[in-house]
Image 1 (cartoon, rainbow, N blue to C red):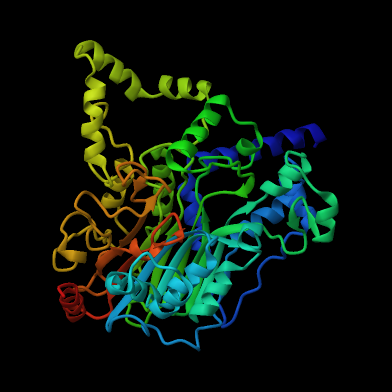
Image 2: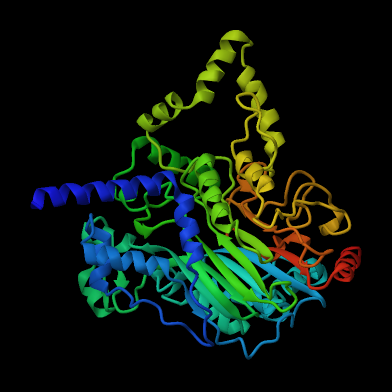
Length: 541
């Protein structure tokens, strides 16, 4: 067979595989889920050999990557780091109310305020010793309640967790937090952060070479300590039985798109964000993409002996339809899970598209959008001057802190609603679905409404979990992004959700926010109806 024929066959095989990846991401997810690693031994599993600094510089500046380096990157992004060192040192439920398991989810903004994060996880005494609170000594009851809930968590899901990055002093954030809490942990890499290596190599920043040599630095970072990892972690008082990473469908290329210069329109948008909301948006050159951890924990009260915790982080640089596609791919991979399931993560449910823009992109976005053309048609059929502007405040109030409200295309649209509609309709292979109940007896402060048992409701919508630094008294710039959903119980109240709560107060100190996201918690009953009654009784106090 000639070399040209072989090249054609190879090209066809690669093209077919690429097409399958684009058309059927759920198939790949299912394959990944079916090959979960074997049960882990006590201690920390070996992780793939880390990249050398020279390899990291290549990752930052060479595209496409050499085959060997590309394969190493794929393997590195696919294997979680599992550590069960604490499994014999900690008794589950040590800090939780009796007969319940408490799960917390928190996007910790890379761990940039590490000391405050660690103090918050350690309880009221440590927090007040190390953090300047906004509350006076006489008004600490709610603050101390929230700190007790956080420090008493049995499982903690963390999004945006650094390992070996200069902005967090090259700490291994997940290991340091887990050791401080006496918990087992698993870590999945979302991105390898390459921004300083890209900028330095292209001389886009000013580098004092003599100073850097004295500090052992290259391109502004310590070449011996730099790993550049950002990812998702799970800390657990329970032993970790299995763990896997699912790579979600790519909706934004965090390398190719970020190395290109930004448009004038995007520069104007970023300038506006800084002036109006005190939010600075920087270039982020990195390899990797959005992912989810799937972790099986050994919980003896579970009918199967395991609880599966699914920890996604969905894309913010995409329209709502992109997040829906990522969630649908994840749900396809979760369908066959027979264990009790908790889905806890940052879903980035803003209802908007954070993708860097340009005039060309804005034009194409409208031309290809059927809603735009239907809207133009409606304007012709119903020629009411200013109809769009009149409906805007109505729709804004309707969606305020509630991305789950129904979508009424063109007139009162809510494009994030489709993802939550999929979550409501989704059924596991055993016929069970997510528990979307909101019963007064099992929700925080007796609030009713969809998902109130597992997520705190407010006077309107849900208690927001994310805010810009300047949010104009939360009239704009605050959102419900972080969610906990629980699979319905096959037995009366066993492992059913209750008292879903947002811990906003502990996240704000005199010096500012600990993170741009607040923690959210939920409690699962570890026995049948009696556990549910106990939770309801404590909720009524």
